[in-house]
Image (cartoon, rainbow, N blue to C red; front, side):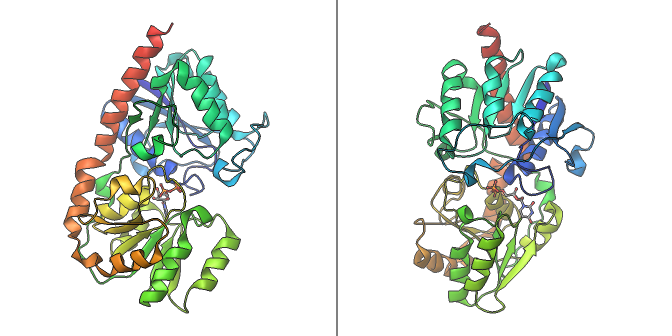
Length: 361
Ligand code: UDP
């Protein structure tokens, strides 16, 4: 297939602003390349693909930056300026689509979804969030009624946020396993990874690190400075270590030495890349039973699932984390979330999208 991938509009690839979609895009490109497909990527200006994807044509476009939907009011109006980056991305993809079989859209936004009706090539949407916007949810509902195969989700629990979606197509996510080194170290610090933003619940991880008087390493893009300062104030002196936003290679080098990853989402996390990245390094995860992580982590085998927001339970399970066999964490990723497994699932989905598109004409 000749495929054009539209990146997230929230940040350029490599900035960290685009969250998990940045890594997902690189894994997807790599998996599709391995399967012999021809791939082009349309992304915001300054974007860079990972080393392994450098052979792919990357088309960068400029446009006005926008706020991510999860940081706007749920009922925020569906107005976007003509100059917005998301318009530029989908318009560029459409202008290149003459010789393509289909477009995959990774941007959680209105315009790419609405263009599905008028496009001459099918647009397949890999939805990267739960229901964070009334306007987007309605847009998906409208297009879904005509093109139900054009939407895929990372997890069942994410898809359940869209009650009109019957028998959702679930593709999971994928990770290039050779990028993550397994490490059997059980005495390292605690870890937490994510955009530093209220929906990620870093304060709960700080709470348990305080109780245990253990060091907590935090990696991620600081999206909300005020929130970061508030969290820092909660931490006992010397326990919280801001490690910054690192490349995957550097991140995994540090992450693999952790004795546990704490994952404390306050929202319906669509997937939770960082949970799987930790497991790929052999690091077990203690997470709230909420969103994607609750479908990924096998309680008692690869980590523990805790009643959402229950910090006491979080603490109790962290005390038991050394009972988890770190090899089982890595093994789960190898068997369920490699970039090749992901590409197989996506390929099956795309074939359905193309088939249904030609039948609908
Ligand atoms: N990440 C990174 N370097 C860091 C911290 C995080 O590359 O120092 C990446 C991480 O690999 C993951 C993403 O940030 O792909 C966060 O994605 P996740 O799905 O966990 O959450 P999202 O931000 O999409 O809500």
